[in-house]
Length: 458
Image (cartoon, rainbow, N blue to C red; front, side, top):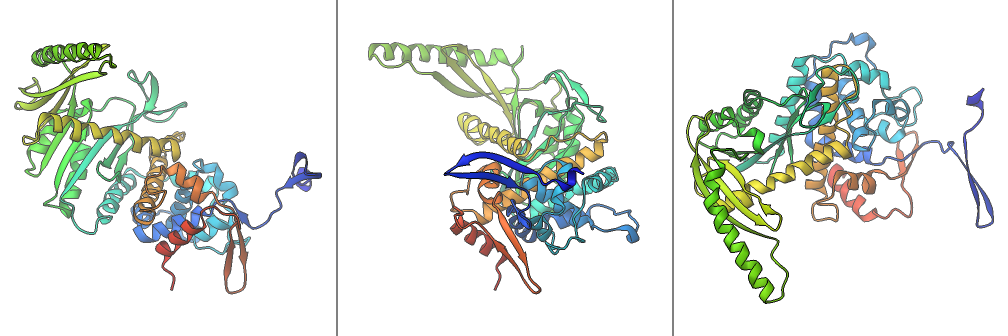
C-alpha cells in the first residue's frame, strides 16, 4: 500500500509559492562522472586487466553480468562516492551508470547488478584471483609510462583499517589500540601513482613479510624496467635487514628508511646535539638583543656509521639534531645512498615520504577503502581493490586530462564534487542518446575539454 503513495518532500512557502518535491523526475542522474570514469578506463584499460585476473567459475547459462561489467559498475560507483555495496540496489537503474557500462540507459529490462550479486562475487574469489589482481595493478602502473623512467621511488606505508565485527584475520593491534586490518599501500613517491596494495591482518608485519611483498613487486618492475633506479622509502618499521638485503642484491636499488633511536645509536648524536644547543642559545640571545622573535628551532645534520645487531653490515645513518624551545628532537635515517649530503638525504629525500600519508588519506576518506565489513578476508580484499582502482582512475584523469587546469592538483573528493556530481537528464531516441546538463553548470568549459580529450570523437 505504501508503494502507491508518492513520496513528497515539504518545504515552507517561498517567493509567494508553496513548494513540494517528489521523486518522479524520471530519467535523471546525479552522477555525470560515471561517464568520465568510463572514458578514463577506456584509455588505461585498468578494469579489463583486473577482470582478466579473475577466474570466472559461473555457469555461462546463468550469467547476466560479465566480470568486466561488474567491476566497472562497482568501481565507477566507488569513484562517484557510493562506497557501499547496497548502493547498487538503487543505482542499478541509474541511466548514467548504465550508459557508462555501455548499456541502453532507459531499457527497464537491462538493469545493472544488485548488491547481492556483488556479495556473491566478493565471496567467490580465491587467493589466486586476489594475487593476480594485485599484479594487475602493477602492470597498469607500468603501462602508465610511455617509456622506462630513469628513477622511481617506492613509498611504503601501512594504515589502520579498524574493524567492528567478526571479520577474518581482524587482530588487536596495541599501537592503534583497536581490532583492525593493517593494509600495505605502495605508491610511486614522485607522481603519487598507486603501484599496488595488500590487505593484511592487524598485526605488525615482520621484516620477512615486508621483503616478500616488496620482492614480488620489484621482480615484476624489473621485468619491464631492468635499468630503472629504484629507491625504497619508508618509516622506521621498514628498516628491516630483509629489505636491506633485498636492495643489496640489486645494483640499481637503494633505500631510505626512518630509524628509531636506541642506547647504542642515540649517544652518537650527542656531540651534534650539544653543538645545536649552543647554536640555538646564541640565536635566541641575538633575537632578544634585536628584540625579534626567537627562532622556532635550530637544526644540524651529520652522518655516522652504525650497525644494528640484526644487520649484516654497517650502514650510513643520517642524524638530524633539532633543538626547539620544548627540548631536543633528534631523528635518524638509515640509507644505502652515499653521494647526497646528510641534509639532502633527510630534508629532500626522506621528509617527502610524508606525502604518502596524504595519498592513503585520499583512498581511505574519499573512496572508502576501509569499508571492509564482510566476514571473509578475501571479500574484504576485493573491496580494498575497488577503492584502489577508483583512486588510480581519478589520478589518471587528474594527471593526463586535468593537467594545466584548476583541478590539476585537486584531491579526489574535490574532483568528485566539482566534476562528477552533476545532474544529467538522459533522453533516448531510436538511433541516439542525448544528455542534458544544467544550463547554469559552472564547469562547462572544463567539461568540454575533458570529454574531448577522453573520447576524441570525430
